[in-house]
Image (cartoon, rainbow, N blue to C red; front, side, top):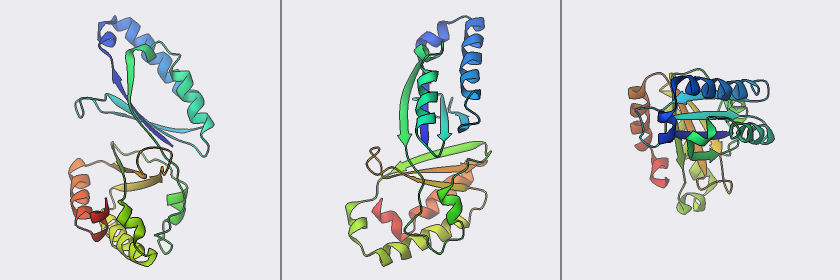
Length: 197
């Protein structure tokens, strides 16, 4: 999967309204052409971060469709007016920490939902974390997971990017209430496992 963020260049704002409309329509058609090969979610970040205007969340069981779509988007009239400010590549896999977790299948076969907001959180675990015995890590992650389950309106999607990108994990939180997300993160920071991020 790929989380890719874009920011409009100043040149975008100098285009005539009709040219913008045509460019957006072409961009959306290119995305629509892939709806049977990828799951695609788009989110506006306008007014939320100064370094991005929107993000695309692309999920697929294989990387080639993601690459082909990305290459196609670069050929559109909109592409010269966009900077790709962040890109996070990750994959889903079974977790070594949640063997008894009832949602294991969902962890492996991630399907994005339809929430209003997506909070993308790339992070790295410390070297000390990986030196702990697996039983200790499982115990701490069990507490972490229980904390997350207290917020059923926030869907947590964990993906792995060891060696593929600068971070070890990318967690995407889907929800409709930013305050609830912040409360969840505050409580997760109080878990023992959080000392290792």
